[in-house]
Each structure stands twice: as C-alpha cells, then as structure tokens.
Length: 159
Image (cartoon, rainbow, N blue to C red; front, side):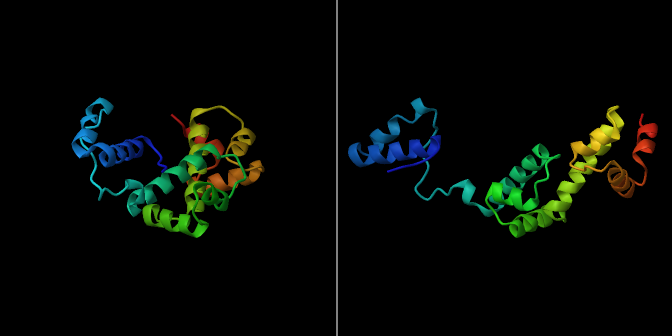
C-alpha cells in the first residue's frame, strides 16, 4: 500500500486502523494529528478537478516563464516541464487570457523591459539581453511597436 502527501497518509492510517481496531478507535487519534474530522470515502482529490488543474498548470507555466525571461526556451519546453502538450497549454492560456502562451510570454517580457526602462539606468543592450533579445536594434523596434515610443523616449518621460 502506498500514498503520497500528509492528508493521504492520515487517511491511509485511519483506514488501516479501522480494519484492525474499528472505526471508533481509528478516529480517536485524529485530534492529536490536528485533523478535525475524517474525510469520507467519496472524497475527491482537488487536484483531479479540471478547473483547479487548469489553474495549477497556468500558474506553473507563468512561474516558469518568469524564471526564464532571458532564456531561449520555447513554449514547447514549458509545456513539457509542466506535463501538458503545447496545444493544451495554448488552449488554457486562450481560455484564461485570450492569447496563446507564447503571446502571454512575449507580453510578460515586454512589460518587464518597460518597467526596467522606467526604473533603472541599465543599457539597452543589457535590458534586451535580460528578456532574451540579442539584437539591441530589434529590441528598440519591438518596444516601439508595443508601446508606441522608443526606449529612449520611455526613459525621458519616466517620472
């Protein structure tokens, strides 16, 4: 018999004690384990509920995207890391954010670059590398297209 997680181990212990000592005795130890009441046998794991599972996948993907801003990883790589297909990852992002995972990640990178333009004095080359763009002129072009202003103008207008 195997189980994972703290609550599952307690459920397993209660079930084994119930088989050998009866339900009343098995439930006697729950307060010492800081458990208010035993879960019923019809209890469903939250991780199996589709909506929570979707949120978990999206949260994990966003977390990975944040940690890999400068890396040349793809959304295929992220999907693999969280255990879904790229198409499934895109479906989840479209349902939640009305854009693909790639589009979300690109916007995340640009928002980060914009924040850094306003709040730091780092060179444009440094900032472009920080979001995974190796060519500074291409970085300037992408920033201008997204924000309607050059990086230099964004810096000048910063409060």
